[in-house]
Image (cartoon, rainbow, N blue to C red; front, side, top):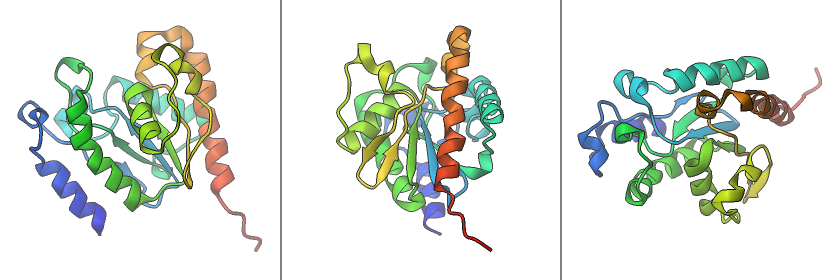
Length: 195
């Protein structure tokens, strides 16, 4: 299977400086037939150590959001824009995004989801640029969350990254409401075939 070949390349990648500080380069995980793909920014410390997606503090928040939304991790495919942990949780540099996004582009092609769900600023910015969707200014960026944009034959549905709840618990209600729309989108994608 092509995704296995890609994952091998990701794990062995040393094309940028991040390969010197990481433990694991993180491959995407989940349902390879998923109609919905979640794209986060980069792995955190626990993810880097254990080589799995969303198992640290923001993973706990994500699981809670999924529970509220009645979404199962098995229904979706999850990946990162940048596959290696960013030292001291710094912002990704442009060259790191350019090198690493080549893997993401192949993942999108192989999984072929109907809906892309970028989480947070950098993942959303990359997907908007990739599909030539006009990007708002950074100060107005919050306005893109929980809206559907068209990128060719795919829908793009940006959401806040779960880490936002850890930084500001007062926005949890809004974020829960936004994540609940994921189930609506998933249901809209499943075709009902009469028996």
